[in-house]
Amino acid sequence: MDFLAPFIEVYTPEHFKFLLEGFGVTLKVAAISIVLSFIIGGLIGTLRYARIPVVSQLLAVIVETIRNLPLLLIIFFTYFALPEIGIEMEITTAAIAALTVFESAMLSEIIRSGLNSIEKGQIEAGRASGLNYIQTLRFIIMPQALRRMVPPIVSQFISLLKDTSLAVVIALPDLLHNGQIIYAQKGSYVIPVFVIVALMYFIVNYALSLVARRLELKQA
Amino acid sequence: MLDFSILTTNMDSFLEGLKITIIASLIALLGSFILGTLLAVMRIAPFKPLNWLGTAYVEFIRNIPVLVIVFFAYLAGNFGGMTAGTIGLTIYTAAFIAEAIRAGIMSVPRGQMEAARSTGLTYGQAMRMVILPQAIKIVIPPLGNQFINLVKNSSLLAVVAGGDLMYQGDLISAKTYVTFDTYVFVALFYLILTIPLSLGVGYLEKRLARSN
View 1 (tube, rainbow over the protein chains, first blue to last red):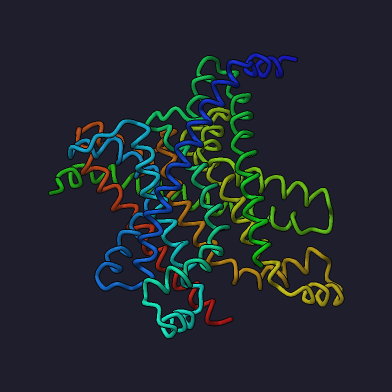
View 2: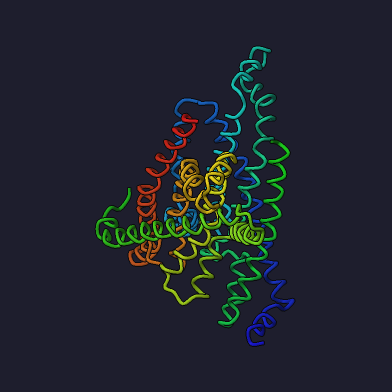
């Protein structure tokens, strides 16, 4: 029973409440970041799709740079390096800002390839029927592309939920961080804490991945 | 402007970090390729308990953060930061590589397996000599993407004092009190690794799309 003793000690209502509070922060930060990233990524993806000279090349360089950097570096940079040039943010804001920068680059690619997946003939048909370019994008291309984008966006949200854990390096009080506080009390708490923390992430992410899979099947 | 003296006076540390980042990523790639292939074959083997085991591993690992796995490897095992980090990355990446390989195997027409079996090969032989060599072509671009992710994720070694590029950056910025410039240089070192890889994978994807 020695093996089970730490589990019984760790799995108390207070600890569960504390972990759930942390998970609340994880979900909140991830949700705000995905909404912001969808807006910014949507804008970037559309501008690149429209091939506006100079702007779209510039955006391509920015997006590729961000996509090829470790997220951990971006989080560190946002919280520890930006204050040196006068940009100071508190922890939650810094976490949201860093995640938004990274995920906007990721989402812009999803949105761009979603737009590209709609046959070019549709633009020509839209234009021929008298709509201008913006109207064609808004009323013909976007609605079709958005439907195809939903499954990869849900998958990206799963990545984001997982990636939020990286913000423990700037002490964001998320699920992993609160887990660390609990197992810091006693060495034997490590395994029970990791079991429950991993399960919490798993349950939510697995449910989301089933949603993404169902949406993909519905479209196929 | 950037303070290049940060780069020149700490070049040894940057290069040491770069070396560890590359070594950890390569070992993790090799490890997760082996483990991933095993898992992929388990998931399609004609033996239900193996399928369940393979599926359980892939679904569980894919849906938890890699940092949780790295911390767990570090705290639960008796390893140094670099070893624990590399083990954590291997466990995590194997789940994704397993899916890439499984998709590759599934893309080989069923008739190939039947034809191979009817010539007298066992299931294992047919898999190894007929199916896997054909699947590998389709698997290479996603494998390349996983390698890029590995290089980026290897930055998590810093969190367990693994001595990688990110960790050296932390040390240098703590020593010089110059955080901004140090991390810009760290970022450039990562880009030196990841941008050519991204371009290479993009090229392979295009070539594969054309050959089909």
